[in-house]
Image (cartoon, rainbow, N blue to C red; front, side, top):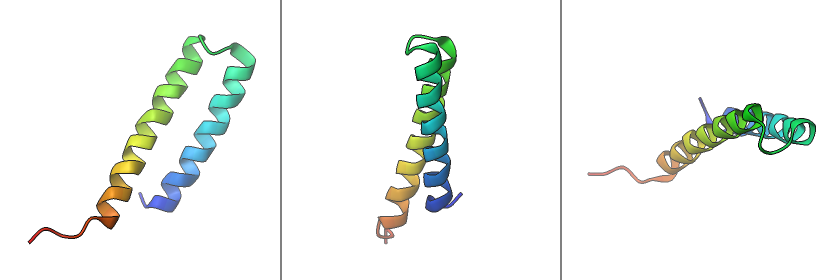
Length: 58
C-alpha cells in the first residue's frame, strides 16, 4: 500500500475512532480495539515512510 492510501486509511480510521469515543466513552472495549487498529496502521505508515526516504545500503 502506498503512503497516500495509508494516509487516507489512517484519517478514516481516526475519524471513526473519534466518533466512537464520543458515543461510547474512552474506556469502551470497542473504542480501545479501534485505537489499537489505528496504532497498527500508524506503525505501518511510519515504516513505509521511513523506507521510502532511506537511502539504499551498499
